[in-house]
Image 1 (cartoon, rainbow, N blue to C red):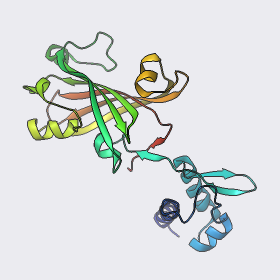
Image 2 (cartoon, rainbow, N blue to C red; image 1 turned 120 degrees about the horizontal axis):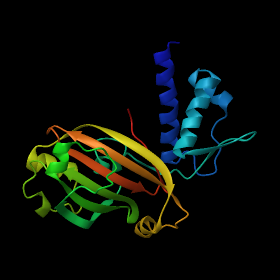
Image 3 (tube, rainbow, N blue to C red; image 1 turned 120 degrees about the vertical axis):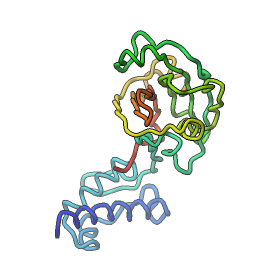
Image 4 (cartoon, rainbow, N blue to C red; image 1 turned 180 degrees about the horizontal axis):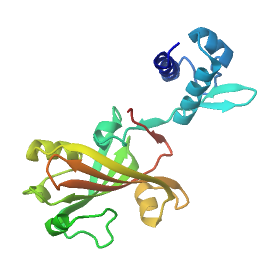
Amino acid sequence: MSKKEIIHLYKKVIEDLKFSIEKGDYKKGDLLPSENDLCKSYDTTRVTIRQALSSLANMGYITRRHGKGSIVSEPKTGLGILSVSGVTAGIGGQKLITTILDKPIKKDWPSNFFYHLDENAIKAGCIFFSRLRYINNIPVLYEETHITNIDLPRFSSRSLENRSLFKVLKEHYNIEVKEGEQKIWAILADKTISSLLNIKTTHPVVHMKRCLQTNVKGLNIYSSLYCNTEDHFLQDSF
């Protein structure tokens, strides 16, 4: 079997088992078929099956216990926020509500800004706003955004309440994200973040800093994002 065929089979095992769990064929606490049984069913090696089961465990679908097997967990919901498509596109069918904490305002860049800026960007200044995103009525994402203030007339007057930033930029300014860079840490929530996300200060959160480049030269979108992954995991296909 070629490497390409092995990868295809590995993905098929994952998708088949995910589908069976989500459909309810396997419920929380149930045991999945043994590694030997799965090897026979898919006519593949134990290495491939173990890799697929490890991926399901990382996604939160199962817990693997030595001597007992793979036990179905209460699956968490994936958040596709790693994509340059933006948070709204990555939420999928879940109910997303966006509230604006700081309305868009033109200002100078912070003196301790988290990305390097060239002279042209510093001269242009930025537009700043902050948002709190609720998924199924639970606060999950807090985001502070800075956009280079280039060719964005009347942007400060536009409503971003329950709207996709990327759609607003595309529809009104013909601006699209082309590529980006992301830096991700696991941190403990401080008092401000714990209050916004309704968690304890000892609770770990995912902190992401991202720089997205657009089709307009010099116009970048910078975000500092905090995510509570207690009931979610981060995912994206690539």
